[in-house]
Amino acid sequence: MKKLSLLLCGCMAHLLSVAQTTKPALALIPQPVKVTQTTGEFVLPKTVVVEASSSADVANVTAYLKRKLSTATGVFVTVKSTAPTAPIRLVLNKTADTLIKTEGYKLSVTPKKVVIRANDAAGLFYGVQTFFQLLPKEVEGLEVAKGVKWAAPAVEITDYPRFGWRGLMFDVSRHFFTKAEVKQYIDAMVKYKFNLLHLHLTDDEGWRVEIKSLPRLTEVGSHNVKKVGQFGTFTPPTADEPRTYGGFYTQEDIKELVQYAKDRFVNILPEIDVPGHSLAAVVAYPELSCTPGADKYVVNSGEPFMDWSGPHNRAIVDNTLCPANEAVYTFMDKVITEVAQLFPFGYIHLGGDECAKNFWEQSDAIKGLMAKENLKTMSEVQAYFEKRLEKIVESKGKKFMGWDEIIEGGLGPNAAVMSWRGIQGGITAAKAGHEVVMSPTTFAYLDYMQSDRVNETKIYASLRLNKTYSWEPVPDSVDAHLIKGGQANLWTEQVYNIRQAEYMTWPRGMAIAEDVWSPKGTKNWDGFFSRVEKHFPRFDEAETKIAPSVYDPGFDATLNADSTLKITLTNEVNGLDTYYSFDNSFPDRFYPKYTAPIDAPKDATTLRVITYRGKKSIGRMVTMPLAELKSRIKK
Image (cartoon, rainbow, N blue to C red):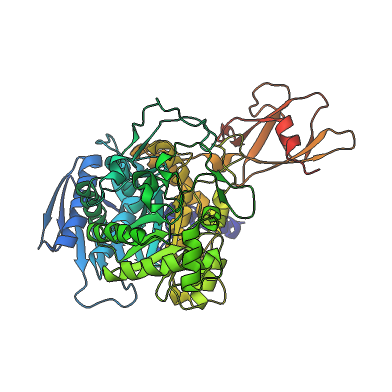
């Protein structure tokens, strides 16, 4: 009996010891290559000394660190080039660490100090981002937080990116976003180690970059009529409606944005979308069109001007530049010359997507070009245009990039391809030896709805968080070295303001960040989402909007023999309970719980559902008209 008591006491002591030493899981996004938690924690002193090199690039890192720490904690931060006992040290390796390569880092947090080592300043910057994720959520706040213990758990981290191209595309053409709002978007993306901002600067709804040699592009092409509602369905503006909605970036604005991004180790890729999506340019300079009467066109405000119903999109209004007009190439040379001078990044994106060719088919000038150049198809006409642009781009010391449509008539010799219509374009380009950036609609289109369409701004497709997280950027059977990386794209036809842009980007942007940073084969949805949830309060602290759509159930329905509905609900997140009502009231956890497909009562008109975790409601109240569900059933 005595031995049994001693054994029980020993087991209890062991359990207590385990309980006391169990460390909470770290919520780091993107997931680092290697993480080892150790004992203890680092507590931020009331006065912080940071030891770091005084080089310009490292000074950007320390300025960022100092600004953010001081804002949230109120501590006094000083930076010294020599301070061996400093509690925070940023160390550039004198001999390159071949494991972490470019942009990688090693982060050591002990009870005495924080040390970040890297081969370059970008690596130090990403180590700082990880360090901030170890601190309490209030570090993301915009003012000093009171009563917070500023501590980070002791840990050893080795980390480096899988891809060098980790991007987000922001369409600032469909709706104009101010310089301050673009900076706000950059500030959010760098927290998750994105290093590329693709700015979609021109489209049918507005030309957003000043070209001094072509002033009408912004004098005329940067504004339209303000419309609010469902973009693409608006009534045509009348002649007396003011064309005052929009804006553009001056060249000084662009220089400021480029520097702001550079200070945060982000490159900006400019996109001038041609030969399609060029209505704003055509309105400014009608002579660039193949079509008589282009001088009567106006910058689009969201009224229908394309027919998307067939297998090939057809233009109602000719929104293309004319490949048969030599003036177009003179125009493009002027544009590319100034863009190349404004953006130091080595690539210029010239669109090439969704070019409607029905007006070209009617053009005598195009027919003459085809005869002269022995072009057999309209795709070859576009390829002729793209190849000439490639030479112009290369003459400015840059590399030409376009959407995957540029493959169709034959790629130029050095063109890089951004694959958006799934992955096949990227596969084709890579197999032909071309550089590829993956950004497929199937995983990376942030304008798609995140939940059921009864909850979201209506668009033609959905993309849930778990689907985005499942993305593998390198297709089988291609040379991985030719896949430069990946990016997510936020088109803004239905995005009218920066708050909605944030809502559409996060949390799916976190999934994309992990897709392009973390090692292949390390994904675990439950583990990822448990980390994502811990970041939601951080967004609240930063006053950055985030979508709760992941908690919304999915709906599926079939018809019973008596024509009533049998409804299946699915949750993207494990461990949630769903409660429902058919009686037009608002359910809570005391209502029926969904456990299996449910039959809608014969005369019911509405299903309402809400998700809970335990006793706490966690999802939105979703109202689903039964007529909507019935309309989705294929006849």
